[in-house]
Image 1 (cartoon, rainbow, N blue to C red):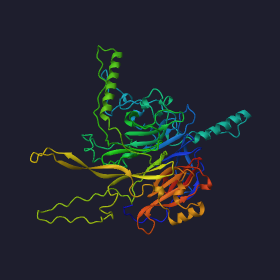
Image 2 (tube, one colour):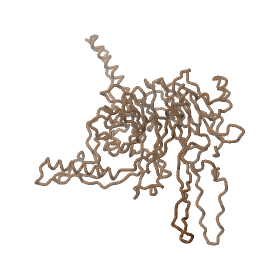
Image 3 (spheres, rainbow, N blue to C red):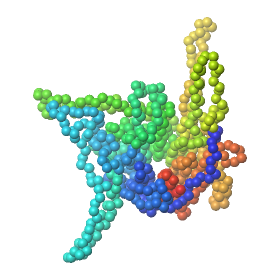
Length: 611
């Protein structure tokens, strides 16, 4: 509200329904992510679907499915895929209703995301063990663990069964078998394409990762609600304290193309029960073993991650079934380099083969424990809990506001110009207005992060992390002259979370005059806030500075930040209300951007394209 920004467009140029995707999922759309030239969607039908053209013209986008992928184990019934994200260039991670996760790759070499994900063995890249003085071959090196024979690559084309029209002696049974073979080929052809699973399935709640011997979801099931990658920064600081890491750089776009260091799996109760609720932090470089667990009293419904590290910390935001929003923080981490150690020594003449093998296994286990200790990073701790932000209703979705002209990053005045000579006049003080048009002093000038949360009560709220100063009174040494103690006040600047100062509740914002008129005429609503009564928020996203929310009745609302009346004050304004397509009051479960298109998924299993 106090920030200055350029005049926004009168109405949002989005939320215009164009068409329904014909070859969509057989169930509710649960996720969409972009990877290279492809868009990949996940659905309640247990499948992933790969789309080629997705960001161009409306008529050609999502017109044909390039590949269908079964996202569940072959020995189990189909299970809904509830989370999907891109973690590196060419690599996706999916999570299911029963806690089963998998890694998918479109690269032709089909290498795992990390060598340890082949068999769960923690290794380094420079070890070269020797046994009895003989060098091992390439497949026996510790840095290249041997993997099982991979299944048939789905990208390998299979020729269509052919028929000889002039062949004689074909009876009815043989003709039916040939028809069945052709139908099977056509069905399986849909599952051939660029993506294939790399590595084995793993369970979110299993602490041992891909090296587990038993499935954790057999006794402690959970549902994966969100998957967040955490990337390591380059460099190796000498200290792990916050002062040494206060100048950590944010994660670059180039770093996001490489495998992450950790995966955060946010989970909730599975349909069959279970106590594994919270966020599991998995170490990608250690076979996806659990290195941290963010416990929640009830399930996590949505999650975000921030690695801007403006204050030297990485943060995770979780929305929960208990109606609370929690913010977790950890000292920003970098990739730690360790020296390789040869865990295999030469076998002596006095040692038997069994004794030598036992000694090597013991040394390998000790080295793995030592290596994990050296590579361990800071644990996430609870930084802030927002109590009942949505009137006690569950939190359904969260999202970062991102770069927004009305909410610029904290203003920092430039350093004073050094004087060339001692008798030079002092430099002129900076003017009230900066070149960027941002005042030196305005409400919110010290706010660094903004995120949104939507609740089942129908409200959208905005939160900010701002810099405040606290005065602390400190007792100094006794003043011997006057015979009394003296106190000194010390100022401590620190960042704290709070509701956004100007418009903390977006759904209370007024409507643009045309929108208000339409609501009165077509819905009989004298106040636009009545639109959200008994109508929960199901999905959130930000497109071009516009906040877009999908409601439980299928309505899509868009807010912009601008001057909307004669007061001249900037604030959020309801700019567009789009009714459900064809009057189908089906909840809007996903809102995803694909170039100039917006893909909307509804609870009835339909995929819609808006522009």
